[in-house]
Image 1 (tube, helix red, strand yellow):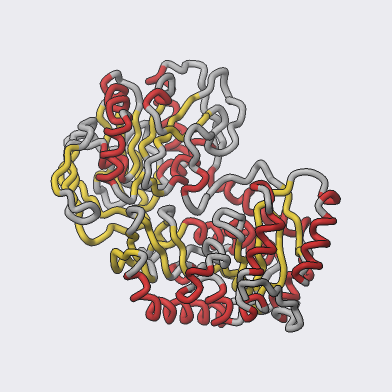
Image 2 (cartoon, rainbow, N blue to C red):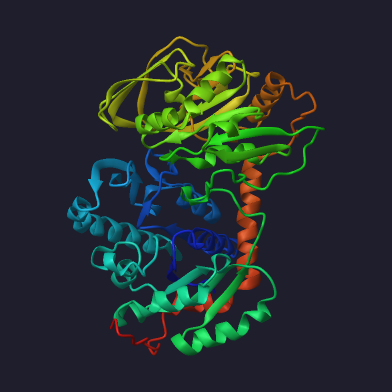
Amino acid sequence: MNPKGALLVAGTTSDAGKSVLVAGLCRMLARRGVRVAPFKAQNMSNNSVVTLDGGEIGRAQAMQASACGLEPSVRFNPVLLKPGSDRTSQLVVRGRAVAQVSASNYIEHRQSLRAVVADELSSLREEFDVVICEGAGSPAEINLRATDLANMGLATAASLPVIVVGDIDRGGVLAHLFGTVAVLSPGDQALVAGFVINKFRGDPALLAPGLDQLRALTGRPTYGVVPFADGLWMDAEDSLGTVPDAPVGRPRAPHGSQWLRVAAVRLPRISNTTDVEALACEPGVSVHWVTEPSRLEDVDLVVVPGSKSTVSDLEWLRRSGLADAIAARGAAGLPVLGICGGYQMLGRTIDDTVESGAGAVRGLGLLDLDIEFAADKVLAQVAGQSMQFGPNPVSGYEIHHGRVARNGDDALSTTASGIAEGSLRGSVLGTHWHGLLESDDFRRSLLTWVAEKSGRTGFEVAPDTSVAALREQQLDLLADLVEDNLDVDAVLDLIEHGVDPGLDTIVTQLL
């Protein structure tokens, strides 16, 4: 008999493993024939995707939808905050941008947002057997409890049992787990059923005494210890993993005799970091995040990715010296690729009265391109055919305020309706399409062109890499990790019947 109910996966910190645990639970349940859906009431991320109906949601919820065998929907992430600076974010509700908000005036929207969240979760619970919810940040951020929509505020409103996941790879996980529960009010503590430990390396038997003591201190079990899995790396929710000089993904040995080296610029307000993951999927392609001009030496391709604050990040490129280094590469006939905001930066002018209010700004001038920002955001899934590197089918999605006012360069692609998209000028190219590099034939043709331009005669692109297949493999691996390392029967019972009403309350001087 399939379970029916819901569960909230909270975390001790951001990047503790909430997103991947939710995805693993969703894929495990879907493989058992359970009608399951993901839900994240409120997300803060610049990694987003476009749904079939033209809405915008967090990338992690799109990945979780795939784990369930579902198309992405705004129902799975009704509130999205996209940071444009340290103090302001774009507020996206049910897939549509509705306001620019600061930390203080965001509170003014809370009551209306609370109703949106409640309506969407209620409708999902009516339609699906199980809804696996993901918290945001940590419920231990008790300074935000009064206005919380995604953690204990959601759990209380919807009577959700809660599992707290912690990342042992960072150290101090037992203190994190204990402390997360201890700072909560007695009413919130009563909803926390137990724990999951993520990214464990070594012999689990060595951890057992600590888990026993954690249970004695909290009265709550640990539902499982998930081992560190080196093969998991795609579809990060936010930019926390984009560490300068760190590799993207897990480089695999080249198909030919030489590697292709890619430098991806780690912009301060970077968005859709997942675009470069498609390159890192290829054997023999090494991708690193960079923030210094010296790191562009001896690389074969520089990628300037998307940005939630295009003009601000363009100014940072100039201050850091990266703008001059990128321009020098273009002048030398070496490949440079700009994606969305990065594409706009490579042009001649940007007229922005929307994001930054800066008005007319000079771009890097590597493309004969003028950009004008508009208040309405372009949100669309797109498909067509590449005009360069061979006629290949291409697809992706658009999320941007900047429009092409003039393009004097060759088009990179055309849409299904024949509209030109993107630019190619010598060794410099750009596109507004996120996800374009997941078009396998196009990506292979592009990398072959990059190798020719860079003189990497020994690089040979692998003939059969499929980003979609690799993503499916990762989702199945997540489900396998859940099946093999969690007390699945206990988790299913928790989903079906909720929290044991007799759980202990941790009493501290805070309570």
